Image (cartoon, rainbow, N blue to C red; front, side):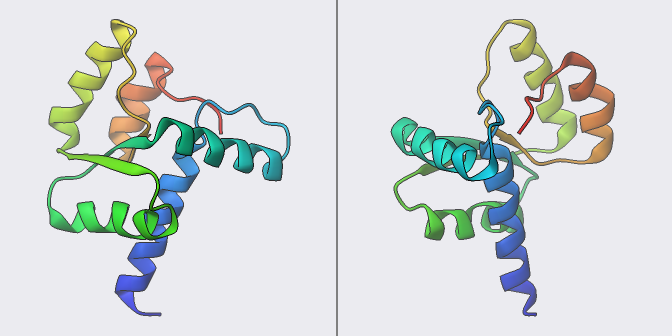
Length: 120
């Protein structure tokens, strides 16, 4: 498989998987349809990934092709810079990100303990 195609699919999968946050689990087809409808109605998704052009393209290009009607707002920072901001926002009841793609230490040590994730 072409590495670019594989990365594009991974990016679409990662975004699609996490865009489902907040949708009650009723059955995959119903949940997916509801998730897509909600995302289209909202019109945008906020995605955090690592810094640099590679992360930007891997995490957004495939999704943009699959869902051109949904705008992607991408922020690329290292976990060192992003995690404290997310933790502060959560403490204040502010939820600015729909998707977080980062390393396991950021997720397990900082975000999971504050219940920053919703079941998919």
